[in-house]
Length: 482
Image 1 (spheres, one colour):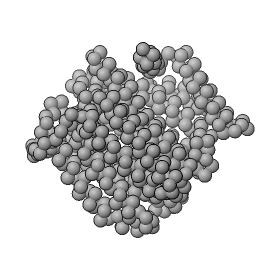
Image 2 (cartoon, rainbow, N blue to C red; image 1 turned 45 degrees about the horizontal axis):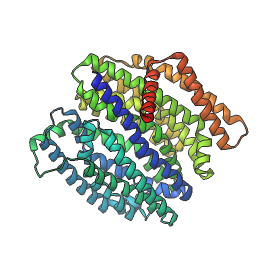
Image 3 (cartoon, rainbow, N blue to C red; image 1 turned 120 degrees about the vertical axis):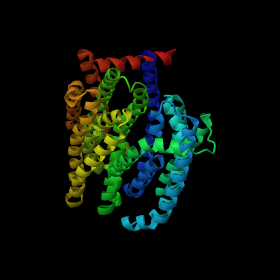
Image 4 (spheres, rainbow, N blue to C red; image 1 turned 90 degrees about the vertical axis):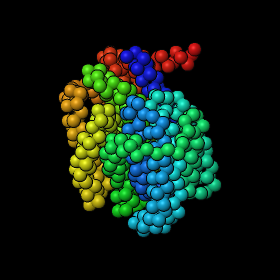
């Protein structure tokens, strides 16, 4: 038990650093690019984001999760997955190449033809790295992934910035994306000893696909929904407005999605190792939720409070429209980790059928705000998405609660203290914007006040999840001093 806990804590630490390296550096590069490029140029790339994201989900086909869950995975399983991923990546790239003119006509942007064909290469590049990354995740080896992310993010960031200064426009964004994916796959091969051999087992394929296929369908549905706003805004509004939305979404993602990915990447392989011990599984799962949501509530509600001075200070007033979008998105985004962690249990327990069923139900319901967005405006669509996010949480917990006897009311009871603290701190931080100071002064005061007040309250309350986070942070600081 202690070895597993130590491995999980170490994994969380390195996974956190990995996300800082990969997403944090990319985010900083994005800020520099946002000061050079226009919202419309970001919007053009956003128009094809959904096509690349969906295709990537299909290339993986849920096989990585199936491999992680399979305790006795053999070399034949990895080889079968590698061959399948590569063939599928090539096929999907050809389809994107052929349909790029249709995508261009749909959005009314001629430049999308060459951009789609260039960005489609990511599918083939990524197919080479799926098994390599899966092996590292299965071993909870996030230290190696951190090294890879750091190198890839830094080098690709420099490439994108240099291209932007050389007036390559939207192509600087394409160059950054392609170089990052290429370097990531390249270094996964350099740092990982596993090498494929040409052996394909239909038995292995059927077993992995039997579990992964349902995750594939649900993953594709979820990806389409996650990026459907890009399609709606790009098609019915303008590239500039889509650029504003994508910028807001990036600020949201740096906290919400990345926090989820950190915990999900570590917790899934760890929980899979104790999948047959329900009592231990529930206790571990409960800690994961309390730990994750304390951080998530603080970050997301704090981001709502600092949205305006933060965006103006970092990327300028030309991105002011993104402020309102970001504040709305954050209210829905703060529940995203809860969705993912609850759905994790279905995968751990091998119930990918329930996973798929839930995704279909939620996405049918989610059509309503999309229609509202087309008819009445972007902000109405985003608020509709927030309502759907709250409704989806109750749906997600229905099945997970039956599997490990941890129902929605128990979960709410566990996370309500950290939510109340975060909402109080966020309101206090927002009130500082009422003063007539410059944006950077307001932002600095908000961060100092919010951080200090949150720590003070948690020190008084002594919540177990806060003390756990505090101990991890102190141990990391001591380790660095040594």
